[in-house]
Image (cartoon, rainbow, N blue to C red; front, top):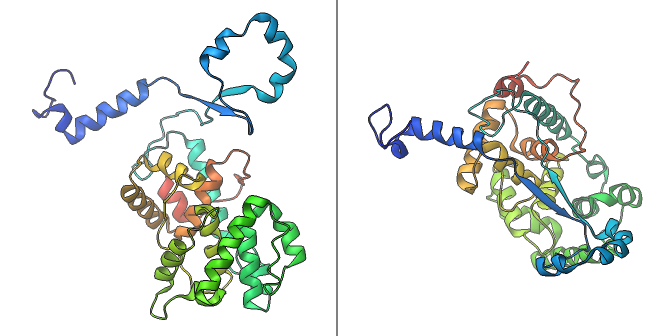
Amino acid sequence: MSGSFCRHNRPTSKCSICSRELDEKLRNQAPIKYVTVRKPGTKPEPRSRAASGSSSSSSSSRGSSSTNRVVTRKLVRAADDGYRNPLVQGMKATADAERLAGALTQAVQRLQPPGPHPVIAEIADLNDATWLAFLIALAPELEEALTAAQPRWADKDISALPEAKQKAANAYLAWVERAGSQEAAIMGEDSWTPARRFDRVFERLALSGFGRTARYELLTTLGSAGRYPLDAQSPQFVEDDATTLAAKRLFVSGDRTLLERRAREFAEAADLPIAALDHGLKVWATPGEHVDLTADPLPGVASALRIG
């Protein structure tokens, strides 16, 4: 496609077919990108200071370099084996498709009643169940301890949380106080549909320290446990958490409107609940997250991903 006009006798940049082929060619020719991973607690060092360090100082700092060094590594992706699918334009490997299929299948099973945290459905008191669901969403690393302790809403004890998450818990308590109760805060208006309620409460839960991942987890947990009429119908890609970054990679867009439209189209083709897509994307894109590749994927998922 040399010159100003393509084989369709149109300017190359304005031809939907040839411009797409050109973009694909340029992407394939792009050099490998590397990312710099800095360990927590370290600060970037100015180039001038780094350059001024002599060999004598390097030997003395060798002992501390293990804790302050900057590590550069290649982003892990399966090798391009020619896999192509218009529903997931960013996927280039069958291995990635198989992992995504497994992650989505697990995510659907996870949302079956009583939901990802069965204890939320078992607790008799709605306030206690809601409070525990919030704490688990806020501090998933403490899930085992929280489930065993089953803190009571009446106590509003947040002492077990890290300091940063205590601030988020206090913001939640203030939000509930303004509404009058947890039930009133989450139920909102009587006229809301479950989907409308999910979206509105998700927006209202945009509290300091309580990000997208935690908000989505809380509402899907409460909905799947049957504690509140909540139904996720929108991906809510409002910030760059693991799910949103995975969606950007998979659906090849940084525009929220287009990204959410492509996500809904894929979910519809795969016969998936949006909440399952949310969790499945996070698991798929997170190194170390277990995905059972021996289990058969759901038929709709396998069909949409063109595997099996």
